[in-house]
Structures are given as C-alpha cells and as structure tokens.
Amino acid sequence: MEMVNGGNAFPGGHNAMLCSALMLLCYFLFSFIQCFCKSRFTKSHKYVNTDILLELIFVNQLRNASALHPGLVENTIELSAKGDFIVKSEYTFEIGGKGKGFNQISGIEKSFVVADDIETGFQNKIPLWLFGFLY
Image 1: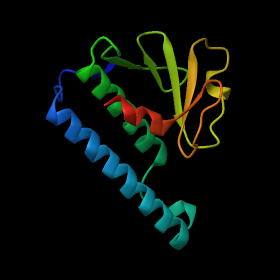
Image 2 (image 1 turned 45 degrees about the vertical axis):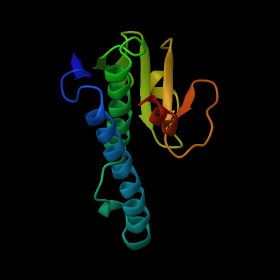
Image 3 (image 1 turned 180 degrees about the vertical axis):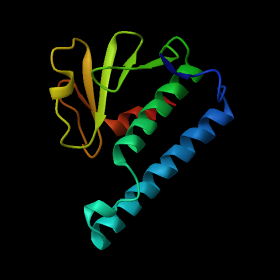
C-alpha cells in the first residue's frame, strides 16, 4: 500500500524546503506544548498524540529526500504489519519515543527503531533528529 509519493504533493525545490521548515516549527511548538501540558495537566488531558506527530515528521523527511534526491531514497513508503513503515520494500522502521524498544520488530532483518529524545544512536536505534538532515 503506497502511503507517500515524493513527487505528487510537493515537488522538489522551495515548496519541499518550506514544508520541512513548517514541520520543524510544528515539532518545536509541539515540544513546548507538551512541556506545558505536563506541568499543568495530567497525562489523560494531552492534546496531541505524540506517536502520530513523530511518524509524521519521519515520513515528511523521507518524502523530502525522495523529492530532492530520487536516487537516494525510493519515493514509496509503505505501511507495515510489523513496525510502522517499510522503505524501499526492505527496510522496516518503528517510530517512537526515548524508551521505544525492539519488541515490535524483533526477528525482522534490516529493521530500525527511530527514537525521539535521544542524542546519539546505537546499533539499530537512530535518533529522529538525524532525519532532519535529509532535506
């Protein structure tokens, strides 16, 4: 199932860079709102689903990379039964927060966890912020 096609919504160029900048702005605003909500509300009153936002950032950055550098990343990102996404029909990515483990993608070759709130990666765990360099 094709989820994102890098050439359809925003072709390369200024639109793709503007979209990346807006996504980054949304990410920083979300971080601010999340800190504010943690200090003022209980967890049941969160306004934003963190997992969906992290997945949106990941897909947006890969889509931009495929639009600007077609040879680098295939423009098809598929949904996966195990994990969140499959890229180039062989790399499985599971997106999550700092504590995200490998349970959901255990036993799958070429699988990676993309985690938010970590500074450096280790083995198959990649910091989400590194995907910001793909645009």
